[in-house]
Structure formats: structure tokens, C-alpha cells
Amino acid sequence: MEKGRAVRQLSPIEVAQLQATVGLFRNIRLKEQFTSTRVRRGERIGDRATYMVVGTTADNRQERLFFDAETGLLLRRISYLTTMIGLIPDQIDFEDYRDVDGVKFPFTVRVSSIEVGNPVSTRTFLEMKLNAPVDDAKFNMPPASP
Figure 1 (cartoon, rainbow, N blue to C red):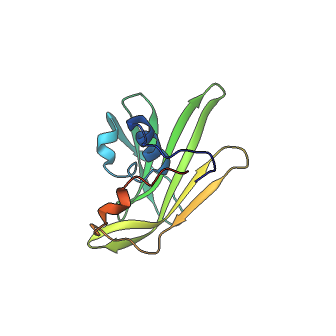
Figure 2 (cartoon, helix red, strand yellow):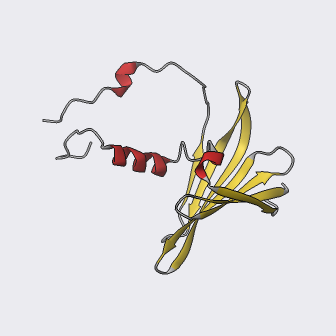
């Protein structure tokens, strides 16, 4: 914890913003995120043929989702942020799908955005467990700093 920062509970808005930033829940339940969708011809991603689904959200933003034509797995998601200077794309690539208790999960997730220096963030998972028990104490508020 940074020196001088108090421990406090996050507001519901802060929790929602954190979830969006981390993106853990953004790439599941895709159908619920869009008010309309349409299928378009995809492009090749690496050596994989794809089909593209263009989805429109409730706030009228469009996203492009690229699915592997053979497996149906999500390979890429492109979102667009509207700014005064135009649309800024945010791209997430999903790779190295593995079976975890009968469900396919990407063990490599690469996030790219067009910002200063074109940052790329890669998350590589070594292990995933479904419904693993978590000690409730992990969710306790830490003690306030002196």
C-alpha cells in the first residue's frame, strides 16, 4: 500500500470500473452485452480462418468479435472508444486454448491499444482451476494503516 493512503471499501461504481479494467468478466456471456449482432466475413488471424460478429451495445458502441471458423473459439475482440480525435481501437487476442474440466480457456491473453508507445500487455496463465475453494478470510478488509 502507498504511504499515506487509507484502507477503505470500494464503492459499487469503483468495483464496476475495476472489473471493466481487469476484464476478467468482459469476455464471457457475450450475448448479454449486445443489443444486436450481425455476422460478417472475417479475416485470417495467423493461420486461422475466422468469421466476424459485429455487436452493438446498449450505448450504441460497436465491437468486432472474431471467431475461429473451425473451432468457434473467440480469437480476437476489438472495441472502439469514441474521442474528440476519432475512434481509438482496443484489441484483445486470445491464444493457447486448453481444456480445463471440459471448458476451453485461453491461457494467453494479449491486450493492445493505441496510446503513447502502443502498449501491449500479455497475460500468460500457468494454471486454471474451476470452482476452487477460496478461504473466506481472503475477502476480509485489511487492517487500517497506522
